[in-house]
Length: 130
Image (cartoon, rainbow, N blue to C red):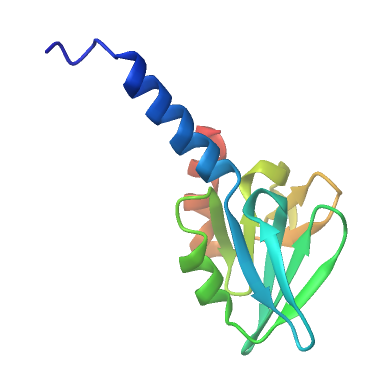
């Protein structure tokens, strides 16, 4: 079989995989509730010690007792980028990269998140690939 030929079944499988990834939900436990959140609705995550604040596109904030490293691993494969020791951003919500002042990510809602020197090259590479 020619590797350039894609059958109807293979297309359907690819579409189903894509839908599954786009509609993936995760459970985020806060102090008083369990929240089911679509991954595509997560704008960014901010870690502080053993807690993470998850910022959603509807402006909601969820504070959970999971580390940022936990979310970085959980969201692997969903186009999130660790830009700082305390920040993980969804590349779909990045508006620009401001080079001045050491560098920061500007999100669609104009939130500015600093980019660490160690993470800058990887972030710029990912930004150019979008």
